[in-house]
Length: 349
Ligand SMILES: [Zn+2]
Image 1 (cartoon, protein in one colour):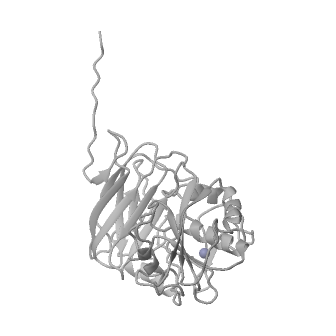
Image 2 (tube, rainbow, N blue to C red):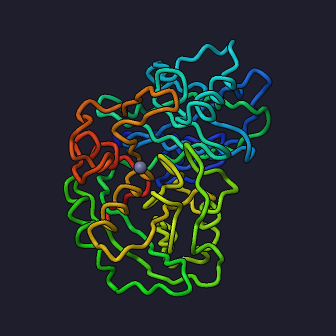
Image 3 (cartoon, helix red, strand yellow):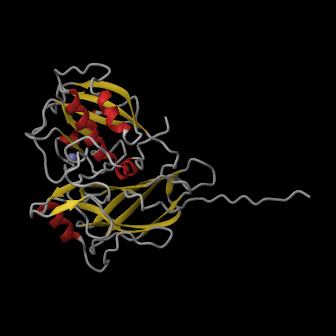
């Protein structure tokens, strides 16, 4: 006798695209509305089995601050833990504008952002993706509509980071291959990430070769730096991280990332990192590695707020005083390697 088998095909209720028949989609788009209480209604995502990470990208008004208001995994654990009866907007504004840190209140280490918020989960090795129904809310100081994209790449062991080198200048010439790549690869070898340059291009006549403005704690949607991603038209490799090399940045700044972490979504005004050109190959390598690490995942080992309060990163094996890439050196720890390799930007080849 031949056993009959029932094949159940699960159809998602939200817009998305799946990679294998019957599996929930690995990219989901949702539209929600933040109410007067500072939180959106809850919405659910079906997290597939064998998922590397969840990247949540929430885009609202350019002058609104955004973060996750709630995040409950399928095991029932709530990871933010905010009181939904207390509007979070004033605290978000205080951390961002007054303290100039932008750390969201609650149990989950989140970077509050103007306009477009990004969070990658997990960050610490003791956090793990749980397959199944996950419930989220967006928090903001500004009521109104928010577009949310959730990326859930497969846990395929991908450790290759493709990059594009865009030289924003009327005069600079970058040798090919770029002379800082060997040192850059040496830094990322510590965590098993391979760097592949897909395209090198000069972008002339943009008026953005010399960036004269920068804002704390992070760039705003209308800033000079956030206008650079729109220059990256028709890249040969849309999935690569864009590295914009400019002639100058404000005094004391060697580079900046448009996100910590940044949105791995090419059409975002925050898609990329910005590097001030220097002929010093080691200095270029360190700044590119530092800013790319911000974009993928990493916080500074510590940040100091306007009040003098010191805010450590959420990892246990990073300590102030070490020669760490996210402080003043080049070393990366095992936990930083874990966080970096959760990024949706990494691929297997
Ligand atoms: Zn930094």
